[in-house]
Image (cartoon, rainbow, N blue to C red; front, top):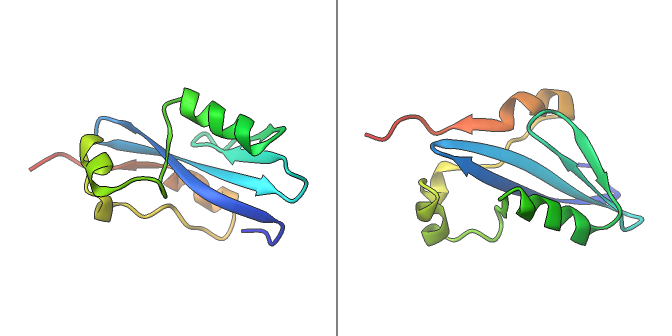
Length: 102
């Protein structure tokens, strides 16, 4: 993460697949979303970026509780947001399969 940015992780679920998005607030008050396709989308504000994520049915990972997670088909402890040294290394981790249910 850059020193001039605050970031949060968002996720959407498609069956047993988690699709991640990283939201960064830039120092100037603008925002950017790194998506599962490896694109960085620029927004004029955090509110606009959050609205776009919610329109695409993403939810904030920080805001999830165990019941929210279970409603989406996973246990909260099953997930950790992706981590990598740079966006190129991060991209393959942005879609995560939870595998089949036992």
